[in-house]
Amino acid sequence: MRYSWPGNIRELRNVIERLVIMNPGVSRLDRKHLPPLVYREGTRKAPEYTSLHQARSAYERDYILKKLDENHGNISRTAEALGLERSHMYRKMRTLGISAKE
Image 1 (tube, rainbow, N blue to C red):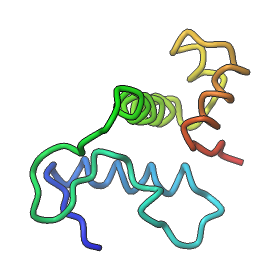
Image 2 (image 1 turned 180 degrees about the horizontal axis):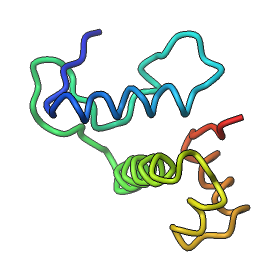
Image 3 (image 1 turned 135 degrees about the vertical axis):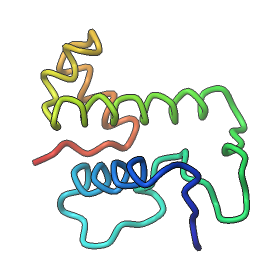
């Protein structure tokens, strides 16, 4: 399946860097590793969610990944920036399918 990126080159570079950072032990990146805002080729609309829970989870995942990137993968600093306890941050990451950098 092919994907197109509607943003600019810097945004694409940031997404690729985030994929590599957040999946250090993966030798091949699959569709499940892509953020939900990557569009399929030929379409220009955002992904359709069947529930508010799916939409909220997708947003939370992207937001946490962005904050992790801003804090260079440091979970303690990211949790502090988000106003969360570190243990809650780990639970949230596990729930959203975000792996901790080892």
